[in-house]
Length: 282
Image 1 (spheres, rainbow, N blue to C red):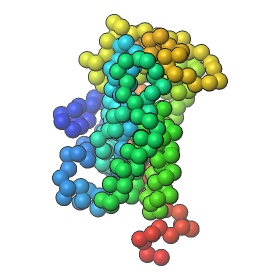
Image 2: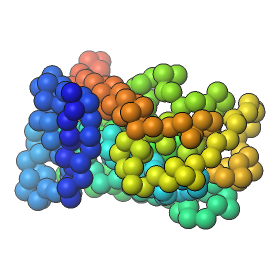
Image 3: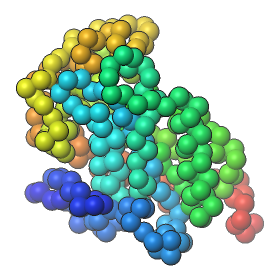
Image 4: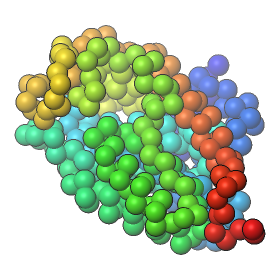
């Protein structure tokens, strides 16, 4: 079975998932709900019926000689749109700059300081909170954003007692050990590898320069390093030249499905019974 998820501005996302059937199970319509396409009245009505949003957080950074700078943003946004189609939860425009300075001297990277990303996320969520949104999924596409997003979530949970905030990677619900990235030792250094290359061949093959693809044998280490300290090409992972779109579609679909199932359940999760939620009857 093949299907297409249509995003904003004509973006189409191919998938082998049974979108209509899964949407019927998980609460969606089969079509994503991009926040930026709504009028303010539609946003108000949307929040009244669904007080949750997905906020994709990506990066603009080098991805070796064969992939574009937008990999983390493009994949994360596509997963978020797929999750929105299946669950009905609106999706915000992606935050396309992240904590990327550790790429070092490779050209093209645009980096935020962790403190800056924390402040941006706080401002975005404060704005949405003022609109009535109370549940926030920070969907991360770049592992070095993790620390800033976790701090943001902690600060916002303290500030807004009747809000729920969760930061998670788009493969977090996979779970991670099932991701076939052809990386033995990765942690934060897994980058521009077999997994990302395959997914980009599925989502945007016109942006992948496979004639320039190169691999880098990953090694074990206690420390995490700047990318330019451990890779001369900006790639971390082997078998990159073996990446293919079929593998990318399978990986992408599993990311969408596992995340959608988790989000569908999460937005309906009861609040702890021992804790009074402000604004609700006692």
